Amino acid sequence: MSAALGKQGSPYVWGATGSSTFDCSGLMVWAYKQAGVSLPRTSQSQGSYGVNVGTDWHNAQPGDLVIYYGDRHHVGMYIGNGLVVHAPRTGDVVKTMKVDTLPISTIRRV
Image (cartoon, rainbow, N blue to C red; front, top):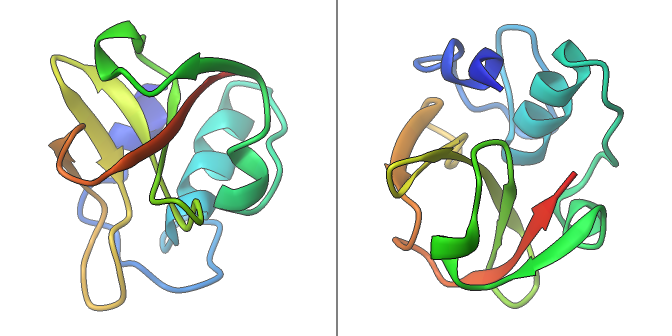
């Protein structure tokens, strides 16, 4: 899933799915599409897709979706070494953060 890492610095735009602007779930849709995998469009739907790995990030593998908050309104992709790549919010850009910076709702393996 290095495609998502290659988009670091791309602007966040709500509802965008690439290839130059993204929202959080749009970045996941775009990155998985590069690998030939179709994902649901929203972080809420992505939070029920694939296999549930739980909430302990120590069980995550690179490429897993990390869904945040109780209402599942944010998603990042685990890239290893305790980090995710994500598109944070309006006015920000695609970047990495520590996986446990936000409250984890579920980790999904596609």
